[in-house]
Length: 87
Image (cartoon, rainbow, N blue to C red; front, side, top):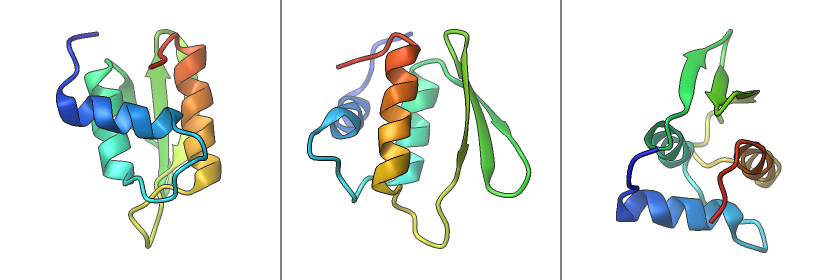
């Protein structure tokens, strides 16, 4: 994992913030994951396959909204923790 830029650090803080936010853009989360070294693959439809530090997960890109919902954001948080990433 390289050094995260200030925008990536802000998004990471948003992911771990309590209460869970409802205004985080999926594209920002995806860019954060890439910066962390996550491998991202396309699945069927809106599915996105993620692999980070040997931990795998599948998520759905939000549509038609661009913001990730609270439940998915909690799942992203859990995925990052399992992959050894925290604040």
